[in-house]
Length: 176
Image 1 (cartoon, rainbow, N blue to C red):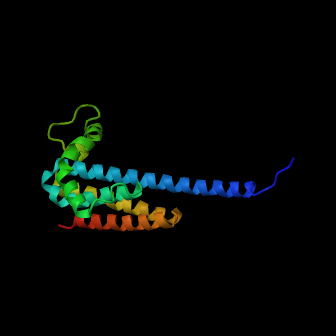
Image 2: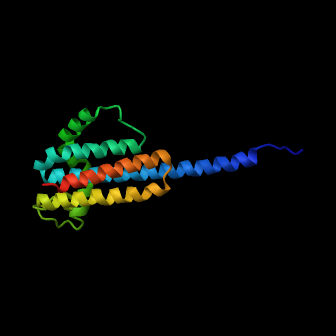
Image 3: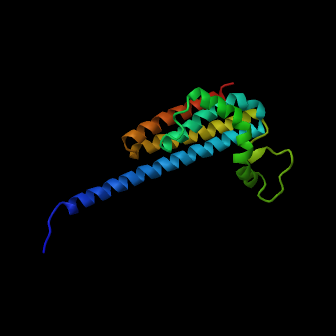
């Protein structure tokens, strides 16, 4: 008995859609991971230079919101101002809890870090620490701009928006 139908055609189309969705999911996961790593950099700078917490807190909070957007909007119901003030006020404690394990691995892989070394290789000079953070923002913004070429519509718009915001943060970090 021979059966006919659209299974061959729709199965191929469905597989293509799954691959496309899967590629989009991978791109979103990568972008969320990169945002999380950037938050950890902000945390390390704040831990090394607590005086910068007020200046960096709102920028850090923006990156946290972007990470949530890439993950599918987790936490997007929180108001931006509440999220910013909560993130800014908890930045120091977050820095010690979330950045410490990676900071120890970077600063003292051989156990020989001096007691005056800043967390996770953050320069002791505030201007240099800000310059490195700005460079990380620019690099990530550039990668996201390049990723626009292969991203589907909605993800491309999100990447474009986040890349522009990253470039703006980089500017703000270098502005005296």
